[in-house]
Image 1 (spheres, helix red, strand yellow):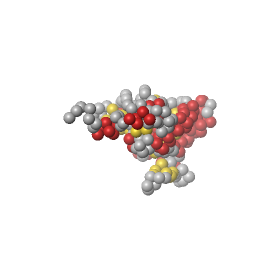
Image 2 (cartoon, rainbow, N blue to C red; image 1 turned 135 degrees about the vertical axis):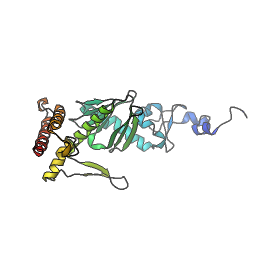
Image 3 (cartoon, helix red, strand yellow; image 1 turned 90 degrees about the horizontal axis):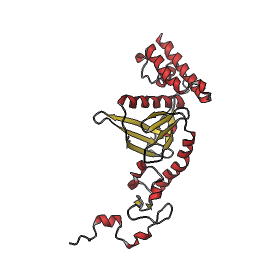
Image 4 (cartoon, helix red, strand yellow; image 1 turned 60 degrees about the vertical axis):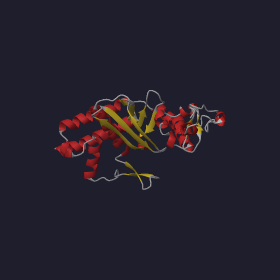
Length: 266
C-alpha cells in the first residue's frame, strides 16, 4: 500500500481535492487556505481573518456552530461589545476579569483575543470554580442577547480567597443594580424572564434585600463589626464624592440597608 493513498482524514480535510483552491469564505468571499480554513456545522467555511474576528474561546466550538451563529457573535464583538468597551471605566480586577460596578459591565480579556464586554443584566450564569488539587480556576459565563456559553480555564489562577471575594463583589453589585431580580429560563430555553420581589415592602422582605446586598445569608451571622466592615467595602466602590448620580444613588442604598440591618441587631 502506498503512503500517498487517500485516507478518510485527508478526505474529510479535502486536502487532495482539485476544487480546494476555489473554496471561498462564507463571510468575506475571499479564497481560503487549505490549512487555515475552518469548516462550520452547515458545511460553510471561514478564512483565517474572519476566524480572528471573534475570540479564541468561541472558536473552540466552531464544529458545532452554524454560519448564522457565527454572524451573530461577529456582530456582537464588532458593535455592542465594542460600544460597551467605550463606557467601561472604573473596575475591580481579578485575573483576566474586570468589573465596572458603576456602569454594570463585566470585561473578560485574554492575552491572545479581543476583550469581551457584557452587561450584567444579560448574564444568565457566571461562576468561578476553584480547584484545590491544582490551584486552578474554571470560569463559566453564560449570556443572553446574544446567547453564548464560555467554559474557560483562567490562565493565571489566584487564591481561593481572591476568587470568593470577586464572586461576592459580583453578586453584591448585581443585587444592588437589579433589586434582587433573578434571571431564569422558561421551559424549552427559548425565552427568558425576570422574577422580582422588589415591590414587596414587608419588613421581612426588606430585611432579606438588605442582607442580600451585604452578602449575608442570615441575620444570625451578622455582627456589628462584620456589618461595618462590609459597608466600608461596598461604599468604596460607590463613594458620593466621585460626583456621579449613580454613585450617590447606590451609596444611599448601601446606607439604607446598613441602617435596616443595624436596627435588627439592637
